[in-house]
Length: 218
Image 1 (tube, rainbow, N blue to C red):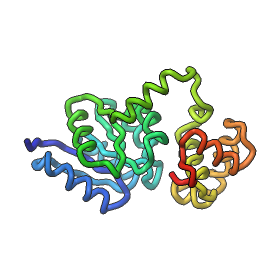
Image 2 (image 1 turned 90 degrees about the horizontal axis):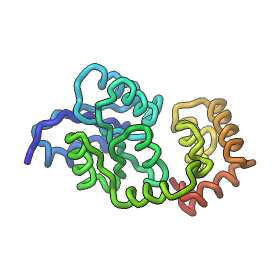
Image 3 (image 1 turned 120 degrees about the horizontal axis):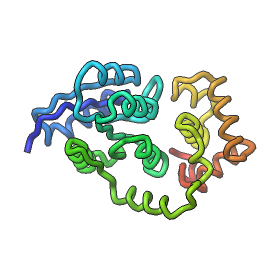
């Protein structure tokens, strides 16, 4: 049944935004859709108009999706946010849920999973995939402190994932709209916190903790 809903799509790729809209229009034919391609555009749009739910990508230009999520939780705490990302659940799902997102949906499964997540958000609830539920249960069984990478800040964590996937400091900076100097500073902090010496050890750490696959891909 079609429902009216105000849905904001935040992704820097036009094709992705249109794809998400096409999926949702089948269930929310009378929906009002907004679009934003950068972190700043997203926040301005959220501040200037009422929305029922936000679909947010992590890798957007500017402050990045994690910073946008934190800002939304601070300024619009009742506005549900669904993170829709290309990254595997093991990389970001638990982190974004802790930051206040109501769901985490992979872009390559953004069909029925996305519809279920939006439906839950509009009812004021959360939607957790079966695989993520198992991961959350496993996480609860681990030591309270968790693995070392849990101590990283959100930005440090993003930099770690990019470097561990084989990207250079310059490439990681371009992806995150940060200077080479800033990324280098983050890299130093990451190595110190994880008690590692170089990028090779960082890659091995990321593979061991399933943050990247054996080919070093995100």
